[in-house]
Image (cartoon, rainbow, N blue to C red; front, side, top):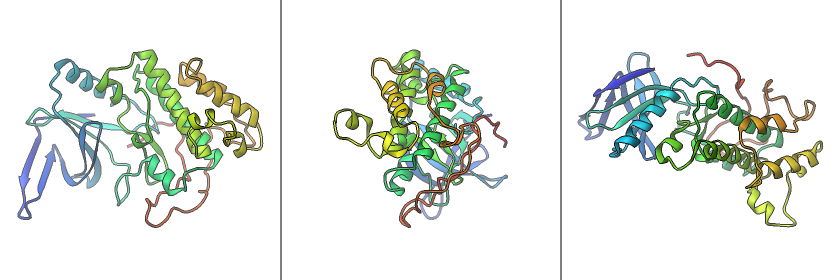
Length: 297
């Protein structure tokens, strides 16, 4: 991790475009903003590698400012295959917090899990959805060991890199920014939200729609074995009162079958259900990193 303070500057070019520098990084092009901050692709001038820069709006509340900065210091120490790596943290000359991370996108830009789901026709294979859900739950278990919690996730903050690996973007930021969840609530809500996403990926339907409809398609339609166990597990996990308190509880009770669903620890490759349309992001959701492995730079 590197800290750059007062290392941010703008330079005008003959084309009247704005070049942004932050330490050894220079801007390539802007992306859509997220989490109350600008986001752009940056090039490390010496290494010639791409990275992401998140430049936050001014945080006028000094307590919130310190809370967000401290959260990034802690998040930078997370080392997990499904958490986007924070590489550098600092402030620009105007006092705006800036964060540098890995760049997981392709030549067209970033691909979110929502983008991929759309490209795959609104649904993944059941095995893929269960494996992905398990990997995200494991990332929460890893972060909880550092006492870092995020709160509920959305598919727009889950990125898919060019190798088909899912990454949580800026883990823990939501809880630090808004400070609206207690530790226990943030922990349970992030678990519940991942399972809701997993159900959506596996069935193409929101669980709330299924629960309110007597003739809705259930998850058991997408697996020939353990269907009753999966129905019961999803019903328990997504119960608003009696759901899981931690991601580890969810993992420990998942009714995975070694013959039907490749073990989460093994992460066997999966062939995509069908190719994405040419107009959609060209990501193949076919390979996952071992979630328990140590990332190497």
